[in-house]
Image 1 (cartoon, rainbow over the protein chains, first blue to last red):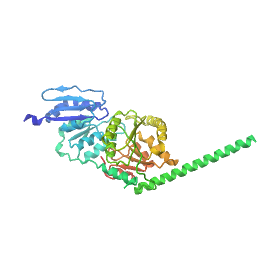
Image 2 (tube, helix red, strand yellow):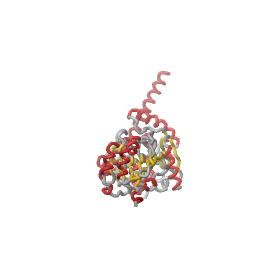
Image 3 (cartoon, each protein chain N blue to C red):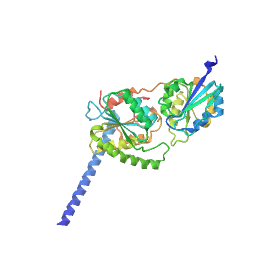
Image 4 (cartoon, rainbow over the protein chains, first blue to last red):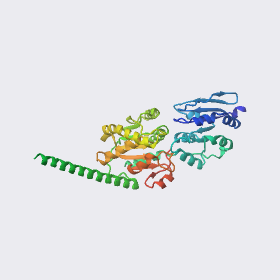
Length: 169
Length: 228
């Protein structure tokens, strides 16, 4: 019975570095909240970050990390919750896999346009988003069941558009 | 006699410059009018279409490459050979493209590298300087594989694409090649165009956006739904 409740979180920063996020999710307060919510495993993809979290390996909570993989599709597939940076690629990959997603905005980036997509997708009810300092509070209060299914974009329309403007029928 | 010769040469060169400038300005106006008309009607204009379209693709970095490759999955074999232009610092994009091309071995492709015109977090002033640098580095690339290999530029995302698109535009203004430039704005732009997008809104044949709100702000952009 206990096995059914072993939920896992996957944290990803994509191709960039986002030390503040890694520090935030790996601190005791966040780990405790996650444990309370039934999560017993956290996997972090830390990219080019200089901060390396302390691996944890207790019976009730495991924390492990890696820098890069060819594909994080499997990690996403195995997760019950994904916490991601606001990169479009990561967000859409997670939503495409139909996994609950919390996006954390990196406030240090110039012209923080990445908020645009997270804001839009959050207004449409597909994900939750916050800054590093708000993460703890969001994790405690969010209702994952409120999230709506996300439909992947229609990339084939690009081919059609291209053929039309290039005069190929 | 010597004085007259110098005067003649001076006169002729001024004449040549005046005609040159007039020609360039006329071409510039014609090209801009052509772009404007094509945007409004989404037509292909008077371009002669070939059975194969040599396509130059400018890829951004990281997620932008993934986004671009997802679009390219639905692009037919007519668009071949493909020339991928990317920042020299971008190892990950190179791997993704090589993998993508192996998956669908439809046509020929080549990867060309140029210096990056803007890194994340770089300020605007140094962006201008590094853009000029990568523009200079692009000239031999674009002009050596010039007319035959240059049918269309597709680009997506940040800095690298501006220099290449400007050169493509230049080829057209001086009348060397009818290059169609299509800019696909990244899906992460919901309300504002990227710097590349704002510039290419004036120079590209088509700017494709992925959210309806963007098209309201930029009426000459095209919108056919979210693509990724």
